[in-house]
Image 1 (tube, rainbow, N blue to C red):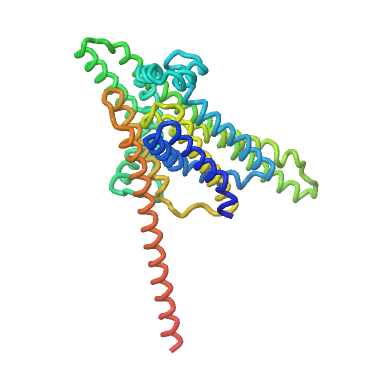
Image 2: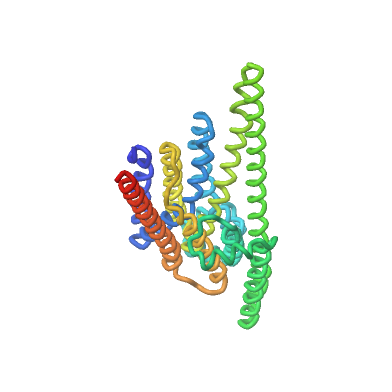
Length: 382
């Protein structure tokens, strides 16, 4: 079962890591491995959401999502999108960007370095909004309660996350402008680029979130209508149309999943720029990670249960927050890419360990409760 579900992912991992070694040696191997772990970690909650919605779809639409949908996710968002980002910010065609990355790495590196403030501001704002909206939400399960409990209370203030993100952007762009002015003013214009790119990242997040919310509301409306049609069919004895049963609701579920996947892909792709500017390594790492997300989705659907490690989602979002901060800092200062990658891995590992401890404590509590009930029954019998 496990090999059948994750077989392709294992194979792609072996090939991808081998290509990384041939391409850039063991350092490239390490970067691709970190990118893969980062993508899996950041997209874990994506797989859980996918599985929860995918279970409601019929076999045909499940197959469509796991084939066409995965092609869009892997080749569209993880492989093409990083090239498009570099091409747009460097004002090059995608073909030229790929050619430079493969044939003239020095010039490509210079283009990416010049474009980095815009990429970092755009991505930093997008990731920061994901983190802030998560941390300000009042949820039943809390990981770091001493942080999450007071922040959840603050989150009741409307538009707080947007205000904080804009303040961070203004401080970053102002600091960048002051630093550029003190060093001859060579990059004063880029301070404006940072501001515009950051606002673009904020708008992108709000558009993606708005579309996701629209599709979610549409799904709820379709489900309510289908429920009413089922009740009407039961009362009248008439059969429902097969097209009505599987049509609109399933189609909107598919669109909703694609929008969700695109939004989750943004954090992985943008986060990857904080680790490496090499699009070959980026494509290998994110491609491997995306395959595991697909396999994990299939596994969760086939098993019919979601994972018990409840703090992993928290760890993933804290990693997103850390990457957002790192991206904003790298506009002005250089941070080692290995350190950047390890921050996310450590946070995910910590959340996994906390989840294991929680499960163990719950199991022990249940065991004690069961033992206490047995003693009560025995004493009652005596």
